[in-house]
Image (cartoon, rainbow, N blue to C red; front, side, top):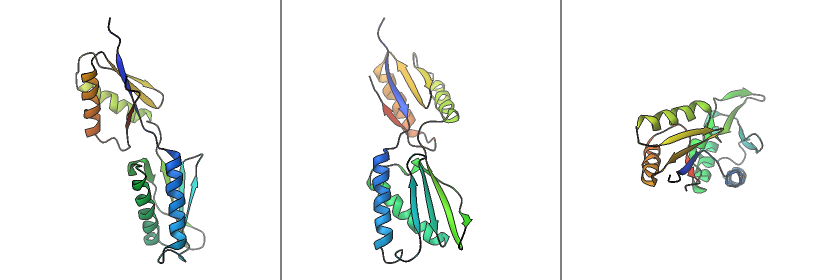
Length: 166
């Protein structure tokens, strides 16, 4: 019996690159003319993977988000990896917006991916959900390549990477 080939479907964010983008954004907030004295702040809780943006208005907050998005794109981090919440009122007539970094595939999304792969009705392709990732097996490498190209066309609301291809 031939050994099955496999690959993992994961959703990971390089935290060091995220930290670098955050540091660059903070420097630009201090140096950029229109944001210098605005009172806008951007903090990152690395352990929880949460950005906290505090700004005097929604307009300034959107400018800070644009600066951060630019830095993230330059560091090859997909913008879908960051989920911004709704603006909330904070003390001192400011607003606060929380941005959560999406890492790992939740059970609902994993189930949708599994269902979509099974709907392809490809022969001998098996999917196993292992915590926050999926492992796809098949004796045929061509079938695995077809699954990867199919998943790249779909949008699951978060970036997907394909690792451990063997």
